[in-house]
Length: 284
Length: 274
Image (cartoon, rainbow over the protein chains, first blue to last red):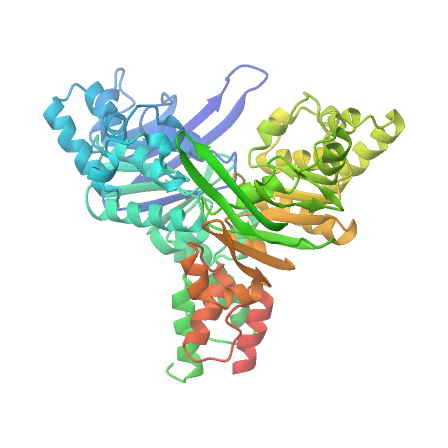
């Protein structure tokens, strides 16, 4: 299972006064097992890129191949593509609509024509995978849940379709710290179990540094970096010029290096604290 | 706020959202109100300008009780304490930015010339004057939220209450809004009450207030709060990244201040260790 993107471009409202170039000659590939972050300022083309990955935007320029589904052919198999690539939009809880959590989570399965037994089994599995207690929550209205719970129910609806690639657009936006932590723990668990490939759009560089193995940086529709978080954040000011934050640990390590400290590359508070302690205690 | 309680009625059940809270917001302070979802922060905020009136206890705004129902008092309180909410789109009423900012003072019956002055001042204060004749539709989130703040400022409030007004913004937008709020606080003496889930927004605040299950469990400096990780964690919050590093270092027996949330100051402290 891999994703190949080659020379991808997209222009909104082509041949109109509102024409806007959203993506330009973007090339990268995603391998099974990747936990990939896509970062960039608002308007850099992140969402346009995501929407190409499951055919919500029709390919007009370049090439996208997901697994063995080639989107350049005349009639791509969009149905299979959408089962393969599960998409969690921003604020997915706004899409909840059904009377009970179980019905809401099972909506996709019923639509796909799965049997009631199969649907029920997948719903239970999905609710448990997102870290909720099925027996407690299945028959409750999704609207009486907390913000973080609602979001997990919405994600369970995607998981019930058993996608191999999970795409999340700012999964922690608007949540409180506990909610953010729970959602990220859940994404890590899903990545380790049912969804071998995770693609996440995020503005939270602390999370990118902590969880992702690769980062794509978009700027004005172009792919400017495709690196590991360590490589990316080592670029310091270049990253900040793109309007992105760098993790606090990275900034602090840079400040110490400027004062002559020999701090190794670090991405998380824990790694930095360990490195500082090691230096002070003369272990390095 | 003196021993204030508020309960919501949902169907048959009652939910005690704010439970006997006493809190004083002093003039010209920058106060950050923290707490997990459902802790009662928003309810407390809505009681600050009488959008909600407590069922017991009293809220007094510059001498006026929010329980008073005369138009005069309600008007006075609402124009003293301005509110900005999470989604700026819900707060925009006009199709041109300066009209939007003028809407509040127009409703207060402010004379025309003064409205023009106030609109200019308010838009300049948030750095959006150049956009005055644009439509708000095409602005970024941070710009929209700054216009929403200007629209409230144009009513010349003494206090600005912001209920998760940075939650929907990207980091650039959030930085813009935070800079505007600190400027207004220091230069104009505006009292700011900021509700947020982003702990790093406590940096530079005079006071942090933490709510948990309807009660205030901490009031004091952000610094002392973040030196107390068990308390922070027990309220469903987390340390801002700088304080996280500081706390980890202090746990390793190093002499740094565990609650430090200013990056430069922490760097200085670490350098002194060598």
